Image 1 (cartoon, rainbow, N blue to C red):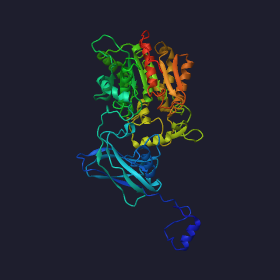
Image 2 (image 1 turned 90 degrees about the vertical axis):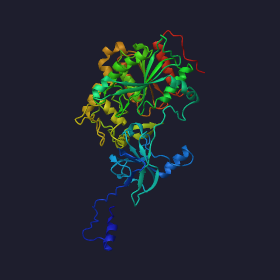
Image 3 (image 1 turned 90 degrees about the horizontal axis):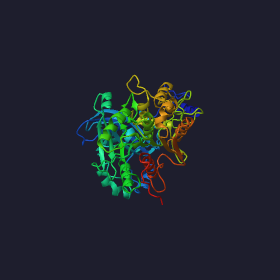
Image 4 (image 1 turned 30 degrees about the horizontal axis):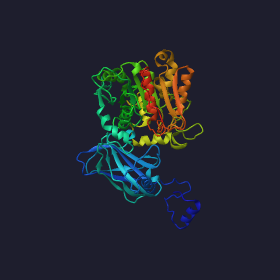
Length: 548
């Protein structure tokens, strides 16, 4: 710390400025000492492990207050981060190539860290926990089965000694069919029958296998309606459902059971639902053909769907195949419908990721000198909001993702789908992670290959006969990730083409309450299902129940 001139004079008068020790006015400030932690693999482990070592710290008083609100006892059981409150938890990371049982390694909490090096944290008590992300998928799924975790320890920072933390527990696999506390009584009652009507998908894709040079499988779950009879001749309309970012084959069970319960009560029409797993080590595949991820769209439309239609009594025609998905899944279904209009009879996409890159969560990627971190006036671009309050900026979101790891994050996932392949074999980054500057050459590739609005504008004459009237889109005007902006632009393009589309902006709804109608958390999904059924069975006498 640089002393003021009066202080320096006093020190000099006391004989405290010796030759060779410069406390001059222009001396550089002394950098704070780095914060290190010792992390040991517990003796209970029998084999060496590897992965990305993550260290989390949160202010003790705020953590205890949150624990009291949720559990009542103030006991802090876990320390984790959240993209919705990115600066509340400090995170540090390092790669570990080999850690043997009983071995200790050091992690520099000022090396790779967010939101800043831990030496800059205010002095005080913190709860700290270590996690070894053995699958390098923390950015996508958080801590999960196989990861090693430490106990939560209370540490005073700065500390004179280096704290010791033991990775003493391996997280077990959980049963995805064990519904959480959020499950309704009707869901719990329907679970056994839903499970009996569910069939797993494990399909070896020739196209993906050829691309990767190793066996590649597509996964998902088929849900048959309550009255399904494998020996009957009747067929059913089929809904291909894709999940949002963070979704997986295990995390779709709640939706699957809800759909079955609704069909059993007549609140949804009898249809076959195919819950597609679009997760991958790089994030989401979006079911788009990509030079980085491989031909996922081709594999779905030319391999998996024909195989499913041979196995189950599905309407094997466009007006019996429908698409529905939310968020990243919403983009995937919008993409599949516009890329393969002859295959599908309509998409009902909700809160899709940006479909027009003139508004990429608020950023115009095509603007000269575009920057995803800062606007022209220097203010930060927001990325996450709730009830009008900004929770996270684009820069905070991207920097946290970089610390958690190079794979599976939302921003990296976009690049694995949309970007050209770089010289290092990885996708070219769309923007510089340090500065936020956009690479116009990469964005030009994005535009020519994956900007849905641009593609529609360029190819509408040939697309119109098979696509007109098939695009349905719902988004909240208060969408958490500002996705309503791109939807407005897509609507303007379609309206300019005089295309038939149904794009609805639901007032004041966010990314997470869009489906709520009254007290029904899945009300919108039920409405959508009846719209689909009307296309597949226009002369059916089956109608939705009258709402009270």
